[in-house]
Image (cartoon, rainbow, N blue to C red; front, side):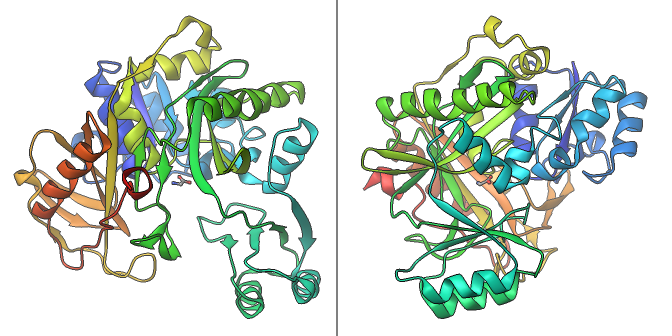
Length: 414
Ligand code: GLY
């Protein structure tokens, strides 16, 4: 099989690595890829440039396209390629609305009794500011409706912070939600679906805040681990039946079958589990810990999802623990410099996998090229073992301003 993966992050490097490693693929191209992609297999095409992706697929005889990030999915890349008879893994444009519009997702959840956090919808600044005047308890959660590259959620702790967030992000025509704040533990529960069935993955936990102790501003994710013990067997069963499968059934009922990766971001508080958000692709950095734990061929899952034959597939998960720590550029998630030379990658021991994210370069000379630069990843028979391995090895890797959290996995390790 010849695959083309769309995207440039650690998630896409992980998918490419796994397809080659488990012999799912003969050849894997990545567009645009990063320093982790062998330069011969990088396609210099932007993720939303559908005609150039189509041309590349034809000229390079691509059998299947795997779409990593949400933006091209929400813009309809799967429909576009399917119209040209190019198989593509991921949801259709309409199905991707589960991530593209929080209001659409909320309506599906309401209609099909999928547990989610209570919310109110507002259009524009004025109505929201009026509401915020009356709020009695903070924090509250304010979410913008469309894709906002991680910047569409504010959790103001005071009325003043809420007003500041609204003035800086909400325009007069913006659809906004206010949700109750739930002080629970978050987890990412993902599955692959063929439109009818699901195969769930091990649950993971991301660390969204920049600083240790889950403090500071939100990022795209500073590290993850799996399995996440907060998702006990009973809780997982609940999520599989009442959230993931019920959503797939509901989408089918709506005439919008969902194929691809369905990611439920859930919050657990005592016996209550609620959906915070749906994503329609692998999480990043969750993919970096889920994919290495899969026992089976990743390519088989992609093909069975596209062909509607997940019932013919069975995969299991290694009885191990995985952890990934993100090395970021100094200043991220604010302004940061690029072009810092990365050293020490050759000193890393063989039991650690370094997935590239914001890097450029090739043949052993690599430079920073983004906020999240590298994902240093290890497996162990326990989470503690995996964590010790990562934190022992990460010290070998250097670049000016390098920053990483030192407490990834703390909830499970404490
Ligand atoms: N790690 C969070 C996300 O991928 O959306």
